[in-house]
Image (cartoon, rainbow, N blue to C red; front, top):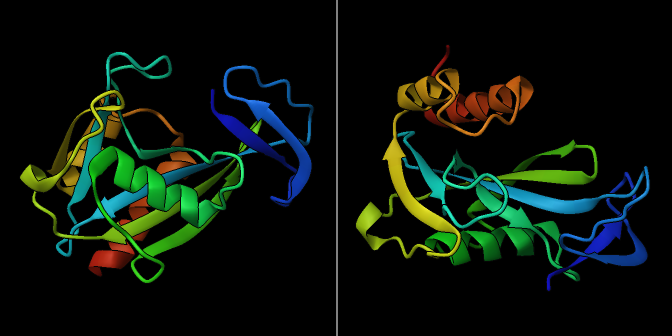
Length: 172
């Protein structure tokens, strides 16, 4: 069973851990979650559909990522999740953290990486990821508006789209 570190609101380890699925965190206690957004040099977005066997959000199109396991920092968790789920290697030079969002019981760090890896070169972790595909910004916006992508909330998507636009030099 996966073990998570419990953090305070500043992201500091408080000396306690919890087990995934057995979270009894008190108010003001958090665990670390990472999302990794993969962009091509042209600004296309690599999205993934979660396995139908997942307890949380089965079959939904969603961000790459997951929870940090005990002892991992944000970069290590993002690097691991990206490689485990999609087979994309990263390093401290090409994986960039853009934000931390405080949620109910998690601190969510959002990372971006640019790569032009072809879809056929991806190595999907079958128990996590059913499929992955490159889409345009416009297709992504349509998926959000039509409810075909997991709803992380307006502020979250505004941040993601702003980062994509900055990456491609687009002004919307």
